[in-house]
Length: 323
Image (cartoon, rainbow, N blue to C red; front, side):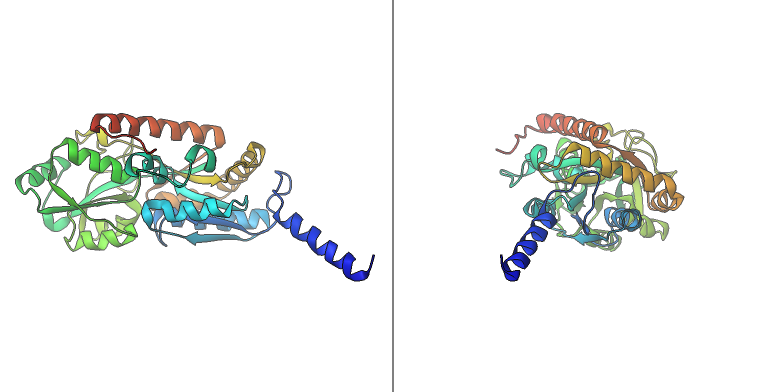
């Protein structure tokens, strides 16, 4: 065999090995990419970059965060599923896709097949926020104002469950409010502060600074417990609107066919770096997020609970799932 053929064969073998699925023992073999459905400085982005830095040091391989906002999360999900690569992972709130069956007629992916849970990383607090200039002090007062001014108020929400639940709530309360869509919900808080929209449902992370500056007011949070960064703000249950209650799980998902052993291994690495670095928990807590690392099985159970809650809401609203 000539030297050329030997070199060519070696190159082919090297390329095949680079593309071959990694095992739990030798993962990662190269740079890992996190695809996100939100822009920079969002709660998900802060979490992904903080975790990515620690994992890069732990793995000895780079972790690259790629922001792909827009399309109700479908831009990020499509980029992830198209890659079909176990070194390209989807870092999203479960809420990004759990409402999709009720908000889209057809979907370009199958969440059970294409989005395999690796690890839940945090629980993010979702807040219901109004402009300070609106002079509304409670969720009940906002409902009363919306009834008194039909068609004059605007609403916006982060894509996914926040949008779905808030829309369902507005319909159940028979409120005439105009929905304002955003390609990137990070644009919403400033519009809220300027009273261009009158209520926003988003992570507490992106409205916290405006709340502290007195430009917006957080009426309630959708989590089971009050937010550590806003302990005076009631939960939606305490505010008298329990149908709005829903925890938001944020974590990593692997592509179709990723072995459970590899997913367990990555989850163990995440658990290890989170436990060994107190800065992660303190930094995330300061932005309204709580570290809650769960492996593939427990993460899947949490997602199933969210799906069950959304199915109940959809049934009450008479919505059918996508074909």
